[in-house]
Length: 256
Image (spheres, rainbow, N blue to C red):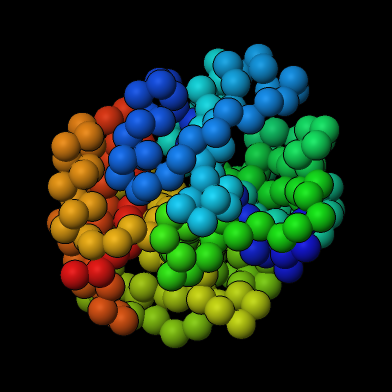
């Protein structure tokens, strides 16, 4: 892939019940599901690619392996060299959950964790084209990457050193501290904040939909649950924190 080092390049849902998760996300976000034929992942029960309305691939769906990570959404960060990135993550206080592995026709990847224990992937894809999975203002694409962590200042330093991310302003949140915006390659990709009390630290991934109230209705009709009612954010958009029927956290961004 031709994306600059540190670009969010893919999103993946590992779930106990892919057959139920698939129609949920098709209805809620407007994705279309396409089976991905690759012998290297047959043991997981197959892999499904979610395409946005513009027919570009945005995310993947698979059954969570046993043993494997806990079910939920995981993000992939594009790097120039997976092996070097994994070594640097360990040197920076992180850890490796799956060592660098090559999937033929897909690319090389590793599952890692930051020093606070939040899990994500680093990857160098084999495609000659750049990923557009994260593409702000594009319907169905990744819109925002939000890290809720036990130590926001340490996380900002870690991800800055690893991927060249910079703090691009902040929004005060009282006792919660700052909501620090993340800049990369001339644009804003997300934010870092302290995890609210009782919340498990982790990444929250938001996808763009149309009307936010219609999206809320689709989430509830399809068996999901609303964690945070539509909330206005800087710029005039609204966001919803939600859970799918299997309990995986995700978010949507839309207008009103």
